[in-house]
Image (tube, rainbow, N blue to C red; front, top):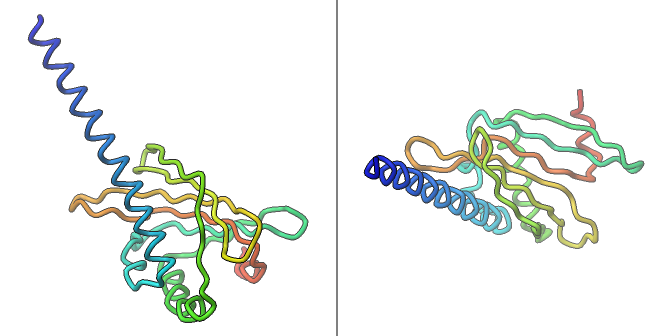
Length: 155
């Protein structure tokens, strides 16, 4: 009986250790994402699942919110096109209040982001998932924006 109890405790400890390691890996992945985004790296497009759910939550001037969904291919095209403009403008985002929470699909990394030169903070989250090959990918992303141009894509 004592051996069974010790075996169960060892398995539980190993599971908790693996979960803590994955949680830290998810947090590290997010840090790498922020660095890649803020340095206009080509690697940013490799950080998304080909079937990622991409949501831009537009904050309208009256405070109401409108979700604008896009497919990954369209979003990657927009990223590539806008990268040079962002680089010229030295556009970056600062993140704060970063939390990593286990969810069914992986880990949810929630934060607030502040576009450079702005005084406001916007909600943001990514769900990141460890792939069978060990690589982490963004499988879902939501970022609030005050850019009203996104409303033209709302359904």
